[in-house]
Length: 235
Length: 235
View 1 (cartoon, rainbow over the protein chains, first blue to last red):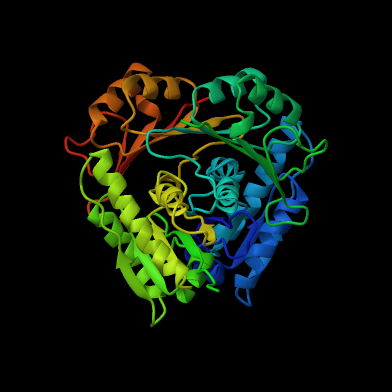
View 2: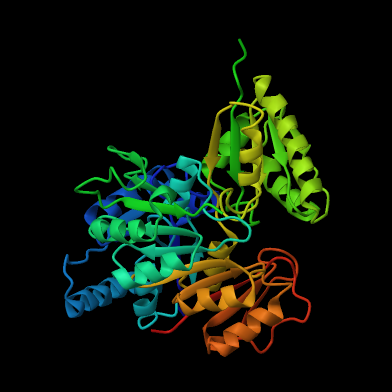
């Protein structure tokens, strides 16, 4: 009889090594293997660098590689292979922690891993939440995210113009993540809705090149991947 | 010349004492005074109980009292008095930590304190984010909050029926906080939108009487104050 190891989905927070929870630290200290995966190599490295000071002496680290492609079949194949690797670890009775920047259940790849992993093993899964980039941005700028009587929309900046417009029209408060590739579109939508004064753009928080820009007039031409917008209407 | 103390707004997380960040712990260990305030006595007690193991030997705790009333004038007066108390501490060069359950900038009273405090002192403020109740609920149930290509709405269950309907119509994913007083209305809206199968109700997470209820058929008659709903449509 094999006893499965547990898979822990761990949110390591937004980048500041001190914005990790005590529960994540205790878990990192006891797991056999730490797994890092992300759509970009930098995210995986950053997640690992946050976790590393907390790892036990015997802990192994393993990077799950994903091809840089939008080809769904190629990606699905990579997920299957990586899930099989993780299942092998758990089936051998070893515990593993899958790292994600921010929170494992908020725009993370951890959900994909869970779905594919369930095809390979019955090993138990435990999720440890993490501080999101937008909470850190709000804290850093001292801006309220959402208050009593308001609602908050969290949306990706890669959404189309109609979706962005509809979401912003129906919320007092909003967070627009991944505000880089489509920043011109996002800016146009915000301006059209008269929300210029309600915005602050936060880029590379806690990293080199960190910047806070209020309003829409001085947004960068080539924004970093680590960019988001906080929006809150005056009442 | 007086040197101001710093006011720290600290999110102590959703209840589990291990879901507090390292940064919050380090800050609690160094501040002179810890402040707890909330709309209910239980919330203040819970926040204090999470912080207590991390406090230095010399740290004082102070409860800011708010009358249990909806009278805006009475409440505003209480805020002014409490802000004056906090300002006196900071102006004397002492540092203080204001505790909030969850995150200080997400449906917290910390924003009110900041606004009133600014009338009394120029002391610096630093915010330390915390894990929200809905992140903890998603982690506990192993449900994805929001994934690539989706958007997430965070809304209070005390919102009116029209607002709830509009928000749920425009989001793949939603969190309905404070799902207690208006639970019959919330249930009706979710049923009308065909979202019964997309819901899970989480109550008293990490507390006595913790329960997870899938769907809308078995919701409690008298839900606890610590209740929320997670909603995610199938794609």
